[in-house]
Length: 172
Ligand code: FES
Image (cartoon, rainbow, N blue to C red):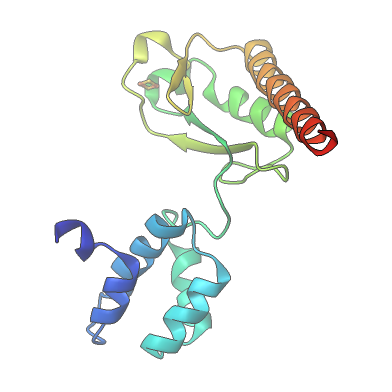
């Protein structure tokens, strides 16, 4: 039952127009879809009678909400004090340059998203980033580019192999 209380459809069904109900509703939509798609905004609007423009305004006001899906590799670059004094700003510029997106964005191929965080709890490794569950410490612009390119190469290789498997299956 506890799980159900956070469920998007359950929340929508329970909505009774009390102030402050929109944020939890949007959070549950994001938990459900991984982001808040346009169709969810339309659906919420049709049930709650809150105009789509108001819902959109709330989503864009709070940084916790996303209007696009997360990349397959979520990069969390630490900008806490220890990392900041160790060059996190330059590393952030490197990441944005290498991926061609801004912090908070996702690459067109859906492979990477970049976020900044306050502290990853391993300051002795500063500057630090995490990609999904893996931690990368003592970063330099060169090591960041190398890591990103390695992940890209592996993703491309995987895609080529999958494509070859599909072709093989079709030929059998
Ligand atoms: S400040 Fe970056 S890990 Fe703590």
